[in-house]
Length: 340
Figure (tube, rainbow, N blue to C red):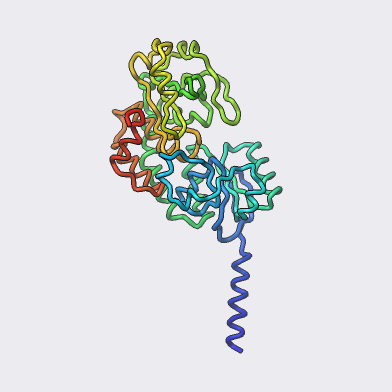
């Protein structure tokens, strides 16, 4: 009889745990009911890298198709995950996630997206702020949702130690210490993102003036500009974006095309290729990869004010955020894509 009651009690306990739920509040202020234990998550493009930093196995999907050079930084188990993006609702349902985690600029549009997706799929949807300045809060809240509080503290410790210090220094610069910078995108370098865009936020935080005076293109950005306009802006320094592949079309175009030679940055050789493995460090995606990108950009524009060795910081970041033990030699190559 005692044995029967014990079995019944254990069964009841398991059922209670199976259906246990809790209420959490996302960064839009939405109260959402989620399972008490979250072990299977669908992530969007902006959240994917940050969720991977917290736990490399917890996401049920991956977003990105990696180039061969980028694949080496991820385990086979992660590369084997299905590559499913946000709009593939049928595929998302097949994954049966406990929670869907999104991140975006907090707005009415983001609110509508989260509510619509939750109602359509019947799966809890949590929205978090993709603003760099909100990352510590985002990481703390995600750590609580996922039961990864200790891990969240480690990631936030890196941000506090390096990013907060860099931004504090940048905020003290005089006007003379702030260089005029052009962020070059597109194969010809004739696309960019102006101040106020999520794609160029780093420049605003590291003591640089974004010369681009153009309209923000909603969604993917990359406003079109003319070379004549860039000549008028006459940036002192140019930083170049590219994808995660081995080619550097933007950098090579600006360096090799004589038409750019009258721009101040080209005259002085102040043209810099943003590191691109395993993701672009500055942008695209505008995810937590920008944490290291913020440090690289500050070091590139203000090397005398950077207190640490960027190679050492890069290795530390890769260990914490990518779960990868980067060697000093690998760091050197990643930091200098135009050389290696």
